[in-house]
Structures are given as structure tokens and as C-alpha cells.
Image 1 (cartoon, each protein chain N blue to C red):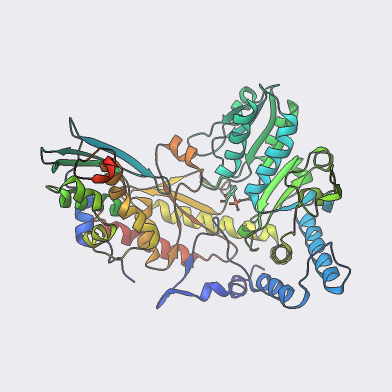
Image 2: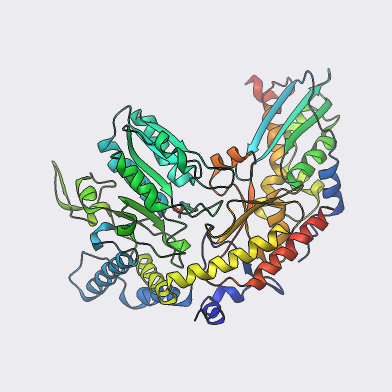
Length: 408
Length: 133
Ligand SMILES: Cc1ncc(COP(=O)(O)O)c(C=O)c1O
């Protein structure tokens, strides 16, 4: 059974007052999630009792730290069903995952005239690294359009995937529309033309089961801080053969096997891509987060979010002048983006904040998407394991107050 | 907390902006946006022979705070010399807006001043010695 009260008790921050007498209503998990106590304790315990550098010492603490760090990698690998732990590279965040692939795989493999296919609903993290690469390498970027309801124009895949396409990189779940994209279908379409497929899983891994083998994807990236884990760490999954053939990204300690004055021999996977002292405490925190999420059950989390989202979409759609972005129904992840006629999203967020309600307002790092919609910004409420209907009711009441302030 | 920062005057100005529009032949015009929220403001200024603000109009799009601040700013600088415009302080504009603002919203409030100054510094002013050094 999904015991929501017990789950809420796991998150210390949910009892915070953001202003005197005003409790927090946190509806911004898609930007960054809150942390359960077990994650905070795991990191605290590590720093108090077992901290030392990893892979470097022969002393007891270094051994404990190394075991904990590499143990976290195994936990994450199991969580996403990666065949081998060395296919899990710890990076700074999802953004760094894209940059790593663009710099390392992209520079080694792309030639002028090659194409990379993206979609019109991508986060800047899955746009800008490719734009940098395109400017440097003379490759062409193409964008699979979205339909008016915020779903991808799948019927146009054939037109956009050609024999020149070398990579198709797309998001599993849109951080603005909430659209849940058909990952396997998109990966298969890429492979059918001989292209690789990379998945932006920043908005999917925290919320539903992930199986990189089931996806059949070549690369997949996500961030710890959106899935109950700490900031400062993210994951790049890559197929072993691909990672093995790729040149290093950042150079330094840990990523080498041997260094001379004439050069270096890179380390084995996964350390080849982890230069310098890694994010040890963060990896341990992330390990605790995946254990926590697995304990709740990813399928149960997804079901919970589906019902909260359906409740929210229904309630929001009754507010006069409110326009929901994104698809209706079940192909919709745990968030609701909207505009309110006559009120700028920043004003909405500011007025809601006075009632303790935290939502996101702006372009959500998806400026091209907003540009295509002909708006400069939108408001977004996003939900997670601990969200309850009463919080949606607060949001709706808050939006009615916004309309009153603006005399609508 | 209440939504007191949205006092009546701010909403009034949002609904009925002052000095809104474009000038036919401005002495300077400047436009800038705040990419964070998509607010955009343009200000057109015409000066008289004594380098005083003879006419000023603004236009743009964005949140209530940035739009109200633009009305208040343009109202305030009418008749000011170019030197006064260049010296116009952020504190003064925040005082005119007159409501407590969070850090993120201070940027909204000050967007019009940023635009105005960028425009003003673009034209040489005989009374401003720095341009002669
Ligand atoms: C869909 C999507 N991709 C990528 C990212 C980038 O995540 P990060 O900023 O943690 O690298 C985000 C987070 O905002 C996102 O929502």
C-alpha cells in the first residue's frame, strides 16, 4: 500500500514554514526534488565516520570510502537495469552527461554534413552542447516538431531521420508539457537508419521504472537532485562498446592508468571518464536515494503521480482563463504547465509564494519550445512521491486569489 | 503573508500604463529583455536643446512589476537632464515602486532603468566630462 502519510514524514522539509505561520506547499519537484531523511543521514554518516579519498589510499578509511562509492555505482546500475556497473559514469548532472557525449563521442565521430536529430521540446541541456558541436564541426541539427497538444509528431520521423543522421537525442518526458514519449519506438527508429539514440531521462528516472536494456538506448543521462538525491551528481549510462571506444572527456587524476612526460594511458571504464577526486558523498547519497525510491516501488510512484496529475489537470482546467499546456490524460507525467490570461507567470508564482506555494515560472530552460508556442514564459506545478490532493486544492485556491489581485 | 506587494497602484499601472508607445524620432532608443522571465522593455527618449528629457515613451511586455516600474520611471524622468538620467539610482526606482520585492523580482523592477541607462550612455553629453577624456 502507498502510505502517503508515512512518506511525507520521510521528508523533514515538508513541515517547514516558509514565512511565519505559512507552511510549505512544494510543487516544484521537477526543478529539484526534496530529500528524504535517509539520504541526508547516509551523507552525514559518511562524512562523520568514513570520509577519505577513494582509489588512492591503502588505509582503512580510504578502503571504506572506495567500497561505498563503488557500491553506489552498483546500486544505480541495478536501478536502471544497466548490464554492467562500468556502464554507469558519475558526472555532475544530466547536463554534463550531454556535454560528455558531445565532446567525446561527437568530436571523434562526426564529420561535416552529418546530422543530429533533436526535438522541439528539449531542455537546453540537450540543445546547447550539440549547438556548440555543430558550430565547431559543421554538422547540422534538426528538430522533430511537436504537435499542438505537446506530443511529438511521430508521423514525421521518417522525414527527419535520414542516412545522414548519426544521433537522435530526445527527452523521455518533457519538463514543460509532461509528455511521456515512446522511448523504445524512437530508439528503434534511430537504429533503423543506423543512428545512435540518447535519452534525456532527467524527468523520467525519478518517476517511473527505467530499463536501459528495454529502451535499447545507447546513452542515457539523468540528475540525482531530481530523484531525492543530492545536487552535484548525475549519471551518464553508455553502452560499454561505445564508451570503451570514446576518447576521455576531462583529463587528470583517476582517469589515467599511467602518465609519463610524453603522454598518458587512460584508465579502464568507468574511471576513464571520472577525472579528479569524484563526488563521493554525493554518490553515496544517490545510492541511498535509489534504495529509497525502490523501497516505495517505481510503479507505485508512477501510479500515485498519475492520479495526482489527473486530479490537478481536472481542477486547474476549471479556472477561468487558465490554459493547460501539454497532452491530456495518461501520457502525462507528474506536472502541469499553464498560462493564465492577463497575468504574467512571474506574478502568479510571486503571489502563490506568499501562501507558501512553490511553483516554477519562466521558460523552464526550454526557450525554443516557448518560442514555438508564441509565449515567453509559463507557470509549472510539479508533483512527486509526497504530493497530496490537499496541496492541489491550495494551488487552485491560490490561483483564484491571483485572479482577484489582478481584478479578473 | 499577503499579496501586499501587488498594491492597487501596481495593478492600476499594469492595466493602464503611463507613457506607453513609440516615438517617431527619438534621440535615443534602447531595448532589452530579461531572459530569465522573458520580460522585454523598450524606451524611446527625445531631448530638448538643453539636453533635457522632452518626451519619453516605453513599450514592452512582461510581469506587473517590470511594467509598472517602467511607467513610474518614465514619469519621473520627464524634464530631467541627461546627466540626471545617467545618475538615476536603483534605490530611487525601488522607492517609487514602493513595495517589498524578493531578489528575483528586484531584477524585474530594475529592467526599465537598465534599458534607460544603456540608451542614455549611448549618446555623448557635452556636460559629461568622461566623454571628452
Ligand atoms: C528534461 C530535462 N533535461 C535536463 C535537465 C538538466 O538537469 P541538470 O540541470 O540537473 O543538469 C533538466 C532539469 O532541469 C530537465 O528537466
